[in-house]
Amino acid sequence: MGVPIPSPGGSSSIPALGSQKPVRSSRTLLSLLVIAVCLLTFGGLGYWVVYPQLRAGYHWRQAKKDLENNDLAKAERRLKSCIQGWPTDGEVHFLMARTCRRLSQFDRARDHLQLAAKQHWVVPQIKLENLLIKAQTGYLPETTRQLQEILKEGHQDDTYIFEALIIGCLETNNFFEANRWVTIWMEQHPQDWLARFWLGMVLESAGEYELAVNEYRQALEMNQEGAGLHFQLAEMLARPNPTEEAMQHYEAALAADANNTAALFGLARCQHSFAIKQATRATLDRLI
Image 1 (cartoon, rainbow, N blue to C red):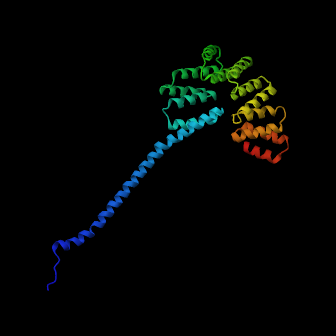
Image 2 (tube, rainbow, N blue to C red):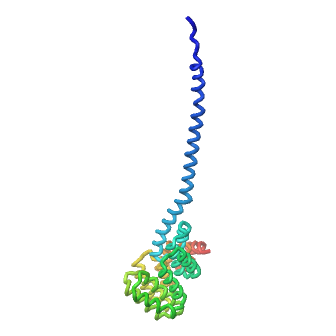
Image 3 (cartoon, rainbow, N blue to C red):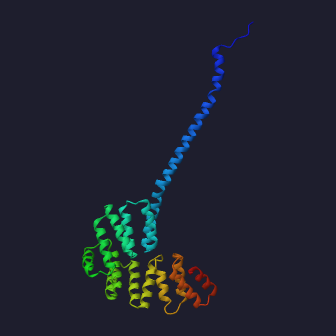
């Protein structure tokens, strides 16, 4: 019997099988690297593209809620975030312009109106805002007639027109005309808490503090989250001497805006009046 001799094909098949392992490992490693690169790419796109859009959308919804409560400072901060995500959105620039105008930041309002116009936002709305800037800064003779015509025709933004006319009248100490405009506003929108708020402001400016208190209270009953209501009511109730109710409203104002320095000072004054020494020191520390 002879010893079987391995054929050339059989002998070559042994190293060939062993040589497949590094090739498979290399392919597996390459696949993992490709997957990792894809994940990083998609993750980067998600962070730089998708996340800013989601963030802008969130702040847009919150800004609308802030404006419903007349919290203009908070709405302005949120609209800044919206503009970062949507820099070419005409509506966002328009709403920022309106908010800046209501905050008496007229130069910024004009800048954002220009940006809204570049993005082809509604021309009549831009023209109206420019009129309201003039009315709010006290240029009433040349704008009142035009705004009256717009109000006669009926306008979806009539409350903004009333507000700008009232502010313009207060700027020129025309309390009678301011009272006339706020009265028309309340007749047309009897459930609008902001009309009550402005009536309180008109009465306060005219020195009718007790009447102003009544209006602020009614406005607060309509909207517990109305910005500025607790503070204005506290200021009226603290005249001439602080009261416990005034202290409560100052605290409520600070719960809504912890950085309200006027509310901090008013609260400290109330606490000092009632000899609450430790609380007074703590409030003054916050104020300082």
